[in-house]
Image (tube, rainbow, N blue to C red; front, top):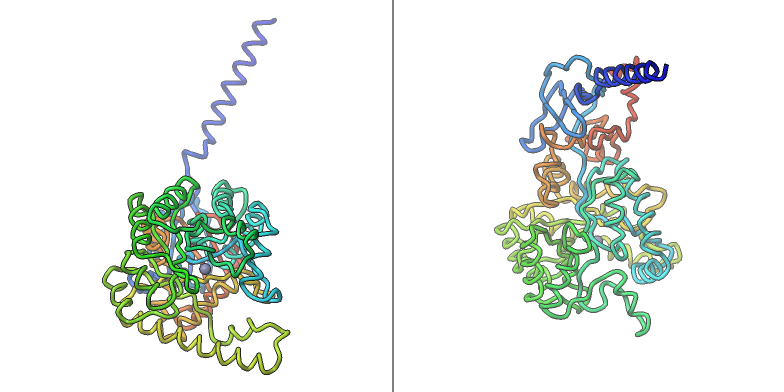
Length: 450
Ligand SMILES: [Zn+2]
C-alpha cells in the first residue's frame, strides 16, 4: 500500500515533468512582428517601405521591406504609420521639476535640495521617466541634479522592472567649482551644495571626484565648467577627462561663453552642453575632435511662457525682448555649429513644469527649435537617435532599428520628415520588445489599421 502510493506519486511527478518539458517556453521563443507602411533607416537616411521588424525577446532579430512573417509570431500591424528608433534625450534632469511661480533656478534649487530627500526625488524621477517613455523617449542621459545618487537608484529600479521608464545613463552628482549652480547661500546653508554637487578646487579633487562617481555607480561624468565667474580650470578638466576615459566613461560639460567652451574642448570632453555663446574657433576644435554639441534650445514662442504672471507690463516687455535675443542667438550658434561640422545630439535640459504638459511632451519641443535653426528633418532625427546613442556610449545597442539592437521602436501617424512636430505626438512606443503605448490599438484582435 505504502510503496504503491509512492509509485503513483513518482509517476505523476514524471508525467508532470514531461508535460512541463513539452511546454517549455525556451524551446520556442516568442516572436513579435511590427508592420508599418514606412520605416526610417536613420543611419542611411532612407525610407524603407512596407516595413517588417521581427522582435525576439527584448532584441530586434530581423528588419526589412516585405520580409516573411514567421509562423506563430504575434503581428502588430501599425498600418500607415512610420516606424523610427526610440528617441534618445542626452540631457535630462528627471529628479527635478521646478515651478516657475517660485521665481527661477536659485529659489527652486534651495527648496528642492533642502526639502526633498533623494528617495522622494527618485519617486518624482519615476513619474518624469514614465512620462518621457510614454512620449517615445526610450533612453536618457541624466546629467545631475538628482541629490546624492538618486539617479542611480532610479536607473536600477527601471532596470529591475520595478517602475516603467527609459534606459538611464546616470551621472551621479555633477562636478563643479565652488557653490555648484546655487545662487548665494548663507555660510551655514552652504552645506546644501554637497547634496547636489561635488566641488572641485584642485587637480587631485578632480581625480578623486571621478573615482568616487565610479564608486557611486556613475555611467558618465557631468561637469559644470562655469557658473558666473566660477570656473573649473583647464588642468582640472584635463584630469577629469583622463580619469573618466581611463575607465571608458564619457564626460558631459556644461559650458557657456568663450573661455568655458574652450576649456571644455581643449580638455577633450565628449559633449558640450548648451554653449549658448561659443566662438567659431571652439566649434572648429569640436568638429575636429568630434565633440558633440548638445543644443538645449526651445522654440522662441515657448520662452515667453517662462515669464512669471506677477511681472509688470514693463518687466514683461523687457523679458520678451531678452528672450527673443536669446533664441536668435541660439539659432545662430546652432547654424554655425552645423556648418562647421560639429556633431549634434538632442538634449532637452527640461526641468520645469511647463503648464499641463507631461515631461515627455515638453522635452520633445526641442526638435522645433532645431528646425527653426535650419537643421533638416533627417539631421534632427539623427541627432535624436543614432547620434544620441553614440554619445551615451551605446551605439551597438540603441539608436537604430537594426538586427541585434534593443527593440526600442516608436511610430508616428504622420511623416516626421515632412513635419518634425510628429515627434511630439508619438502614437506607439516599444521599449525592449514590450509595448508601452499603442494609440492605434493595433495589438487588439480584429483591428484593421489600414
Ligand atoms: Zn542641464
